Structure formats: structure tokens, C-alpha cells
Picture 1 (spheres, rainbow, N blue to C red):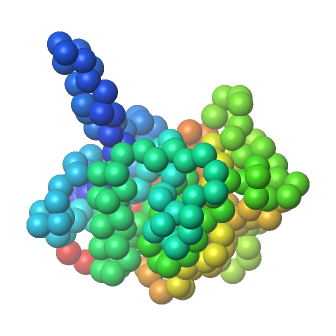
Picture 2: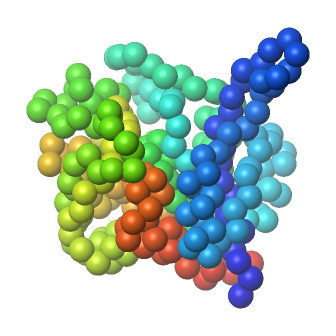
Length: 243
């Protein structure tokens, strides 16, 4: 079978200068692309199209990778007021990724969410978030590590009987950590498949979807056995999807 086509959502850098030496641009970290290629997929960077073009765009990919980024989901989207500092990011990105995620959940398109992508899956499914782990989780670990993100920060426990446990084949591992928000109330048909020792949700999956998995860490930066297993399972699901 040909390599499955994987739509990768980019961040957006609105920076610009009068001479356009730093013009507005889409940005994707190389590690995401490398992980997809290594797993056997063919990545394409999705641009922020409007609703009229979204259906045709998404109908031409075999899977969707929602990447992380330095931004917070607007708490109004899950019925809350902001209670802390917000990293708003770019509204165009949030609107686009929201629609892409909805499409994937409605149609059964294989979906992998990384960090903020995992949080988005939960919110689109009707769940909520912890807006700020340090101020809202008593005894929280440090989830924004100061050292090299290719190295782990804390352990997680993986729930037995979940898709993630079957993918990885073990019930615990060490992961990196680069977030200050996390999944709180679970969305419809969403289960928590991994937790940190402080109780913070580290992975989710949907029980009514062929493959909709979100992990709070960045396996593509660690580039270890877990990275190959998670991205590999995602690409296999994309290969199985009928065109």
C-alpha cells in the first residue's frame, strides 16, 4: 500500500518587518515530520483554509496529527472563565484545528494529538481542562521542565486494558513534560489512559473511534521506543482506513 497521507497542523508566526525579512509564516517542528516519515507515513502541512475548503482538504488525508504549541485553548470553549495567565496563541489556528478535530471525530479519521493537541481532542469531545497546573493541582509535579526536552521529566502510569497499553506493551515509563494545562473533566467517550504520580492526566483515547489518541508528552522529541510505537500505531490505523 502507498504511504498514508498525514495532515500535520502547523503553528502560525504572525511576525513581520517592513522589508518582509520575517514575513508571516506557518511553522512546524521538524521532529513531528521526522516521526511520521520514520513510521511510514507521508506528512503534508495543512494550511488554515476556511470552512468551504476544509471538507475537500480533510477528505484527501488518511490521518490527522494535531501538534502542540505555546498557546492555551480559550476556556470559554469549555464553559469557564479564565483564572490565570493565558497564552492565547493565534485564533486562526484554534478555529482551524477545532474544525479539523471535529471532522476526524465525526468521520472516524485516525487522529493523534500531541500535548495541546491532546487537550483539544478532549475539549472538542465536550470535556474541560485544568487551566494552570501549578496553581490548581495541590502537590503538582513540575510539568514545564527546564532542561533538554529530549530527556524525561517524570514517570507516568498507563492504565491496563487501554489502547495505549496495548500499543506500548508496558504499564509505566518516563516522559518529557512541557505543559501547564491538562485534561480535567473527560469528554464524551473519552477515557484517561495514563496519569502522572500527581494525578494529572497524561494520555486520553476515545472508546468509540478507530484511533483517536492524545498524549500530553512529546514522544517525537524523545525519539525512543515509545515514539516509534505510538507513531507506528497511528500510521497503521491510517493504512487501514478505507478511501
